[in-house]
Length: 106
Image 1 (cartoon, rainbow, N blue to C red):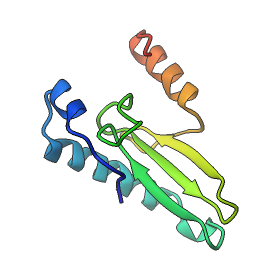
Image 2 (image 1 turned 90 degrees about the vertical axis):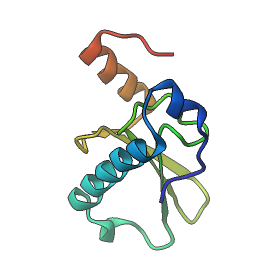
Image 3 (image 1 turned 60 degrees about the vertical axis):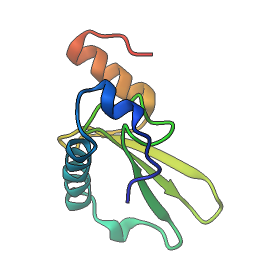
Image 4 (image 1 turned 90 degrees about the horizontal axis):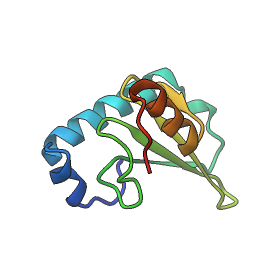
């Protein structure tokens, strides 16, 4: 399940919302096939977000943010690239993108 969507980021990257959704769903399938859900604690909910989700416009198409909300209400955020590789923070994502492209993202 992907969070709330806006259309502004879709147009700026010249991809249709259908293309972004397909990329997001492919990444989610990789995440779910490589990470057994039975390791989640009881009462934990998982929500996925992509570049079209409010607050996640900085993600590139195909990248996914996973929010895990535990029973106490605390939210843990994890990030995945289109290959399903795991990043533990937004800073780690930015560092990976800088290393790959030599770009500085804000």
